[in-house]
Each structure stands twice: as structure tokens, then as C-alpha cells.
View 1 (spheres, rainbow, N blue to C red):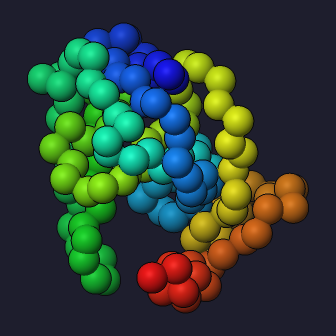
View 2: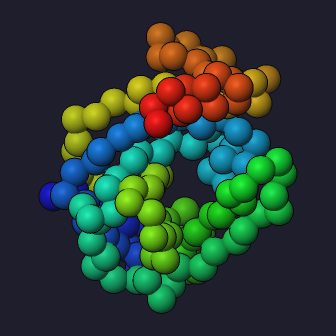
Amino acid sequence: MIHGQCLCGGVQFDIDRVHGPFELCHCNRCRKTSGTAFMAAVGVLSKKFHWICGKELVKSYEAPLLKIPPAYRVTFCSNCGSPVPDPHSTASWFEIPAGLLDGEFSMQPDKHIYVDCKSDWFKISDSLPQLSEIQLIKHRNNLK
């Protein structure tokens, strides 16, 4: 079991295990949401995710649609502002910010995505695959 929580501890959850993917997203919206060069997010199966407390503290913001659905939705703790999982998600899996997880897990990031939107001031210095928006769309279509 891996425990996760926001900065103030008001929103808490457990996951049985991470599922993947473990992506480092460089899109403009993830950079703004995280306040840094990229958002590190790990995939979790909904049936492996368990709320402990704080669902009532979760607020959301849905950004305007840029190109095609779905819209960019961000959820955060109303006390401390930390990005947190969406308590109303009905998907079979979703991504959560990896920095919320307190416990150890063996999965490592598997790719950088939206590198065509990357900040000029950040240099990717690892050997992970780097996918542009078009490459990511093709990659995801191949998985279907």
C-alpha cells in the first residue's frame, strides 16, 4: 500500500500499486499547474485507489478547450493548493501527481511528453524517450 497526501495533509488517499504510465509532461498547462518545468504524473487504476479523507476539500478548475476534448481539468486542495486526484473521476484509470506519494514504489518515469512545448530554460538530460504532441497522439493510437 502506498500512501499519498497533499501538503497540509487534509486530502489523503492510498493506492494498492501504481499502474503506469509514468510520464513527465512539459505542456504549458501542466507547467503552470505544477509551477515547474514539467508535471510528473503516474497512472493508477481507479479500483486500486482508496480515499482516506479530504474529498470535501478538493476543488477543481476546468480550463477552456484549446483544440479537441477533453478539456484540461485540474483538481487541488482548497487549503494548501496542492494538486490532488479528482474525487469525481469515473475513468478506469487516471494520473496523479507523483510528488503526492509518500511511500516507495518501483516504477520510474518512462517518457517525456509534449516536449515541443518544453521551457527554453530546462534541458532534458536523461535518456528517456521524448515525444512531441504529434508523436504522443500516434503512440496512444497504436496502444488502442
